[in-house]
Image (tube, rainbow, N blue to C red; front, side, top):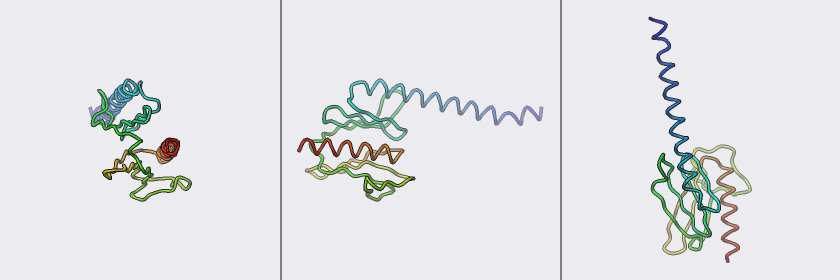
Length: 139
């Protein structure tokens, strides 16, 4: 009986891992359904983001569909910055590690800051470069 009790925490850990994996799989499947209509999109554990024409939609991933969805136009954006650990980062000199990564959009008028979280610095930098080029082309 003592041996059985020793294995009980391991069984609990396996059940927890299976449930966490199932939840993440359901989030990814919901994201796939949501992302169908976009030209370019991203998924990570902090946020989903999609670009269609010049409109960006983003929200938090859930098992059903993204929640807290917000949409804004690149036509109203005057500046895009990569913020890593609360510091503006040059896209040519990226840090290797970071605790907090955000892509910050500053609108023209009224001044509004929109920050979209990312899990990886290279992915956020790639999006920043792409969106800056998109804004530059339209000017």
